[in-house]
Length: 260
Image (cartoon, rainbow, N blue to C red):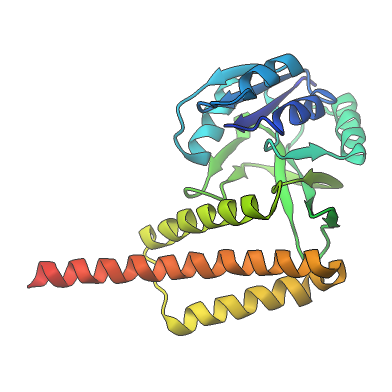
């Protein structure tokens, strides 16, 4: 089985060479879809062995769909620029390539570990951080809103108990900026879908998120980094629902003005 690795990127100078090399450990070729980097992302990706294609940004879902059309192989393996294949996952995918025959299995999903402040927040049954990233593109399509897109598969998806290693944040400042950007995008998706929120809804989501991360998912076992990450993810939730409230409120004001 031939396999194409796919990455979408913009200004990922610190990550792109690493993800390309990681993908080339199992893929026959790698394509990086760049949406207009102003740093050395494109150059480093090509030096690492990838083909770079420019495509104007049209959202995560749109970029994913465009990237799939560039593959000359049916099967693709998708990673974000800040992700890497673990040694166990490299071995599992290599074995799949040798053994895979035509069947009703059209995709494989993997678990994902999150790395933050030199701590590995390992995926487990409580976090359920599983991603479908290896799939036959003839039976798969990316769906979702502005952010948190996911691939939907027609046919059977098999779970593989090996890890993608995720390094989403270089530092605290980047973590706050990235999570708040995603929060605004997610709030807009919810608003456009007709979701509404009030005081008690916001408060409940904030409390539940912190308890879920710090206690239920055992972030407290990671010491201070666990507390910080719990707080960051709670902040993401708070900003998301406060922004949703703002959008709801602005919408109500517009309706009231229109009625007057």
